[in-house]
Length: 111
Image 1 (spheres, one colour):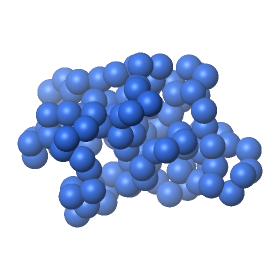
Image 2 (cartoon, helix red, strand yellow; image 1 turned 90 degrees about the vertical axis):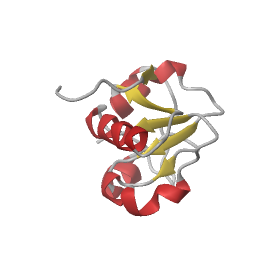
Image 3 (tube, one colour; image 1 turned 135 degrees about the vertical axis):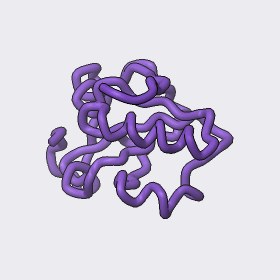
Image 4 (spheres, one colour; image 1 turned 180 degrees about the horizontal axis):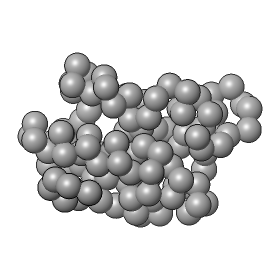
């Protein structure tokens, strides 16, 4: 990848108290997401910065880590110091045995 290296965290190391920011598209979120995650599609981040905490650990996740890495770089450029990219995204999350749920109770999967 090109550009600055962003701080990262493994899926298994994301703390239960972290603010998990899922920046995937709505269809990806609907198919399956981490319990307690906050959904904010990547393209909406600039307009909704006020929703992202500056006083808590923020772990940003997407499908495989690319989009979330871009969001982490963007947030850091705008003053966030508490953000980390979840390495491997939701694929790594599920592989690590972390829970994946849906809002409607259907079986969850990662798109």
